[in-house]
Length: 481
Image (tube, rainbow, N blue to C red; front, side, top):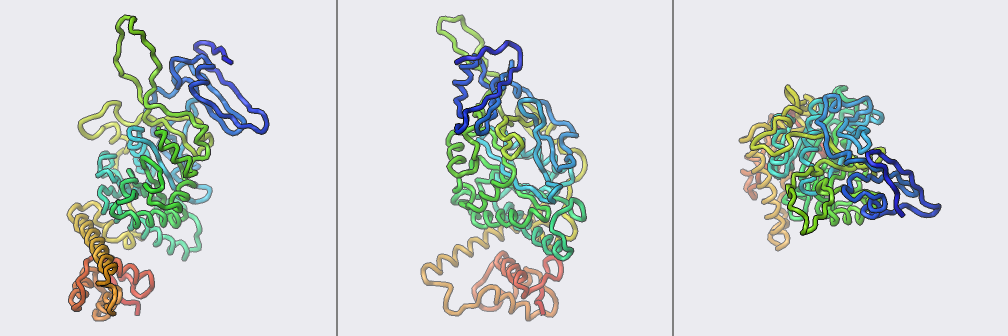
């Protein structure tokens, strides 16, 4: 059965399946029935259960997008920003903060290579700066994903080690706020009263969470901990990734379930990626989504006997086209605003830089600086950060060595003192609070196996959590007498 579509007009069809059935469709076959052979992107389907809306446009409604305005970038009274528009011209919004519940947001942005993740991330970071949000941004692609974000966010981590340190600091701040808010009798977060909203984001998250990544287990734990504790204390978490296979996201069902309850953006996908999303139960409505093509490319059939034509392939691609799966219309295709220059540039993109606006980014509150620790203080000092990153590598190398000795029966026994016990012994010898490095020097003079600074820091953190040690100042520790 075919339907005649008047030329040059927008036609909307309301469809309903019989009771007991749900609507299923083949997009190519539907276009054929509607007589739309030139450009499948002219036909947009929104389906849910027995009902569907089919809209046929004279031309692709998402082919061209304007840049965002300042009003788009500022949070409305519900804590939302406008990220683009749907095919029908209505604004597409993402929530930065839920003002009704006082909850920071958890997010998940998925898409294949070239789908527009980096530019959507740039827009989110620029909006965070414009709204006074403290952005802790980890770029696991070595800083290449969003180079314009340098000096525009509070913390930009570009290595595996600095990303791990950033996550550790984020969790420590969440725990510190939790203690403060509990003392106040507060069970929700209020922006700026007295603390700023914090956003922790891992771009190219697969690189840190996939099997074989050097700090996979701890990163997975820290992200889960942020998801558990951060929401009610104003610390949000977002992962931006190319795929969502469980093994590429820390192998954690808990982490996946946590993010599933958050804000999910699905950019262009591959068939393999979609199959995995369905199999893992992340997308319940996946079969009702119209596929996003790589290009808005009308179909052209040309006979070999036709005169030679223009074979220029200068056609609009689909970067930024997406589904907001937790929005009010999850099966409605939308597209992000045009972010940055249309063609690649040899250096920083001035259009993206201008999105961030003037001034310094928001910074962490004074009350949480001690909890954020030495890594936060060193975030903009390349030399100091390099030392801390080396300490992380040393810490993990020592753990690996200890595990190897234990598995071979050459360590872990014989009554040798644990590092926390050695740290406590070192603190007992001191009349004044000690820094972690001073504790390290004393510990390594006790005649036992030499340890690294990172191991001592971990031991001090454990002892502080247990109440055996108290922090007497920034990087100062003493016994809880």
